[in-house]
Length: 375
Image (cartoon, rainbow, N blue to C red; front, side):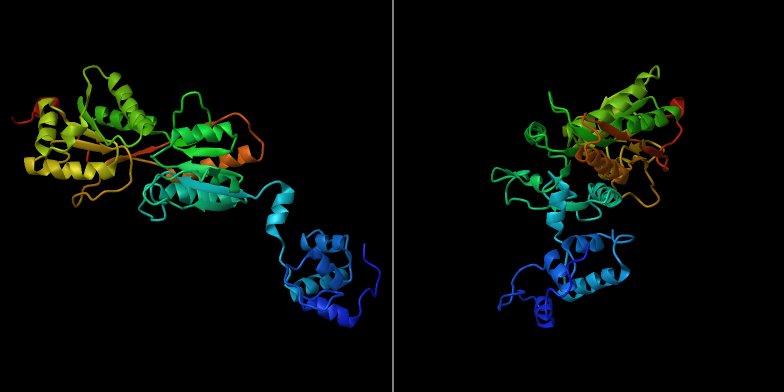
C-alpha cells in the first residue's frame, strides 16, 4: 500500500513540512490535508487514513505507522471534523433550545437539572451539544430566525420551556425535523416525542398521603404557568379524593391568592385541614401570608408541595413534597432523540418518569372531631 520510494528530494520534503507547496515557491495558506501527510511520509493517502483512524494494526508495518504519525505531528495535521461528519451523514450534534426568556445556565433555575441530564446522556450517546442561547431583544424566542430553522445545524433537538409556541411545534413536525419536548404538550392533530415527570401520579400520591392521615377537606392551589402540568397535578389529586367517601377537593381561585385574608377565609369557610400547592416555591409565600392569622403548620393546616424546586421556609419546616427526577427526564429526552436520529424508531413516543413522595414534617394526622377553625 506504500507509494514508490524517493518521490521527493530532502529539500522538497522540508518545504512540505514547513507548509509550502511541493513544486511551488510560496507559503500555503490552507489546511494541512491527508495528501500532505502522505507526501511527507512517502506513503499512500489510504495508508495515512488507516493510521489516523486507528485501523493500521495488522495492515501497516509499525515503522510505516510511526513515520505517518511523525509527519502528522510535524505538519500539525488535524482531522477535518466537519467533512468527516458529513461523510457519515451526521454532525453528531444535538441542539438544545428553550422557549424561556433566559437559557437555564444558573443552577437554581427550574430547567437546569434537565440540562444536566441532557449533557450526561449526550456524552453516553457520543454526541456533542449545540446550545441555542440567542434571545431577540424584546421578542419571543423562536427556532425560526429570519425565516430559517436554526435547529437545522444539529441532527435533532431537545426543546423545553413553559412558553411553548405550539405553531412552531406543528411546523417542526411538518418538516419532519427530529425533536423531543421536555414536558407533555398537547398539540391537536400533531404527534411528536416528549418526556415528562409523571405529575399526575405524583399528585395522586401526595393527596393519598393526606387522606391516609385523616384529611377530608383539602384545598388545591397553584400558578397556571403551563396547562398540561397544572392539569395533570389537579387530575391526580381529584382521582385520589374521589376514592374516599366524604372527601372533597377545593380549588382556590387565582384572585384569592393575592389577598391573604380572602385566602384564609376560603380555607376556614370550607373547614379545610390541608393545602396542596403545585410547587414548593409557590407554597413558601402562602405559608408566610397565613402566619399573621395564627395558622400553625402542620397543627392547624397540613401542607404538601407537588414539586421540589426550592423556596424559603420557616426554620425547622421541611415541607412534604413530590420529588421530581428532572435529571432523568433530560437524559430520557436525549435517548429518545438519538433513537429517532439514528432511524431506530419512526413512531412518536412519550415517556413518563416516576416521582417520589418525600414525607417531610408538614403533615399531621388529624382527628376531625378535635379540629375546628375559629370564626
